[in-house]
Image (cartoon, rainbow, N blue to C red; front, side, top):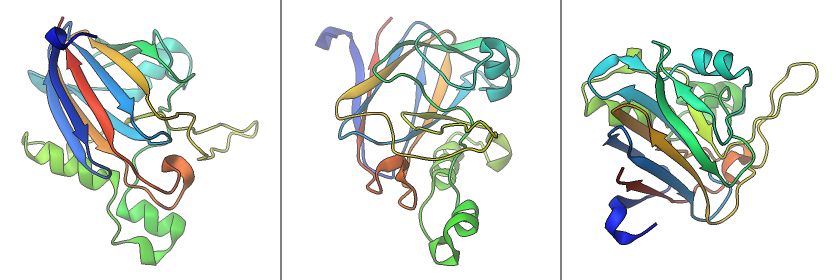
Length: 204
């Protein structure tokens, strides 16, 4: 990675949203700066908001609920949106969803309702592009560890990342990436301590 190739380099603060257009052929690298930080991730086609990331199509196509190096993120039109070209961790979650004030209240008690959540971040970022709650879909959780037990139950446990580890994706079409640098403090997905991440966009 040389300076000449870097189109954008930004540190996203703990608990904050991030959004950027990434054109076909360009590469996004997400770096977990301090380790054990979940990065909630949505994708929209840059020129057609009705086309967006589809967890169902992605899971069905690869016959696996986890994303790994080589996994292709598909849209609701069945088209390739981004490909994971490299990952320093073994897998990433597709089914844990995004935390919200409502889900926090249900899981952790009414006293958590006022806490900031990933859904707030997604709504904030999407509003800048004219998208609303109806445009939110199931998201990817990079670096998040959501094991599936033999009886089908899900767990949220300590992440599998460490300081400086990264995941790299190549855009297969022009896309808009929306990220919530997860603010969750009630389960171990962020080690109970949300931290910054670094977003680097590289030229084709």
